[in-house]
Length: 324
Image (spheres, rainbow, N blue to C red):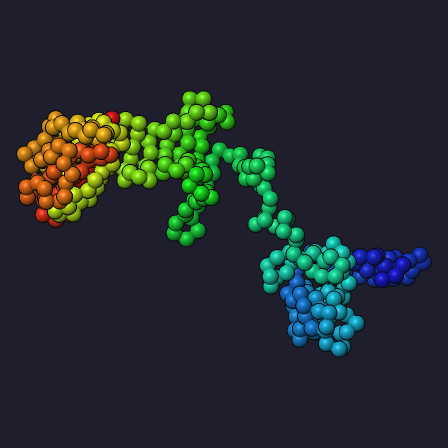
């Protein structure tokens, strides 16, 4: 490049008194059309390809073949049956066809954009609203869609430890009214709040209880092997329990159902409110699996829970509802 050409694209200037100015002007237009918005097929070529289509671009490496030693690092673009050459300057951009990425010339190398400008490494992102360092992703929209790419779609909320939170919060005017998810060590829960500050459990699925609980309600289904007994923790130390054995096809067995008042505190007690002849009340005696008569269901209250015993042939599911 010299004073008769532009510094970046080496476009020829028209000179005073120059004859055939149209040739110089057309050459400048040709180089503009050739050199701007390039896509490159080979970012590190050692020689020119033997055949090329119009618009094909390559960049010679720092160690090209000997006959191109004076062209190292230059861009070659095939146009009008010949190769046009460009020497890049800092800031030039080019699309790398092979790597499917944008490259920027920094004066020495063609580099990818810096990490904080790549979509996968943005520090935070706001869509139609402002994101902040504390709330790194924010969306303002009437609806949002997370669609499958294949067969399924799973939204994951991950927390660092069981004492931390992974939840969805529902608000009005940015004041919390309900929260659902993992909000501490007590398993999954649904909480509500009248003021956005104090949240109370409405439904929980505690880690220590194989069912659903509420402050005054709990339901659970347990499976008990034949001639076996399981201790079921109660949601409170006193209340009512209704239960029924579930048949193999999913229907309740009325002949093995009952309603009891229980105390599972330090002085356990069990009161029969309504029960069929196939249900045995064993008071506060721990059950072993063979305590009651064959064909029956046994129940007893002990400190911390209720024993249920299955003397029916085969494993049986028992559905329980607690009111407390």
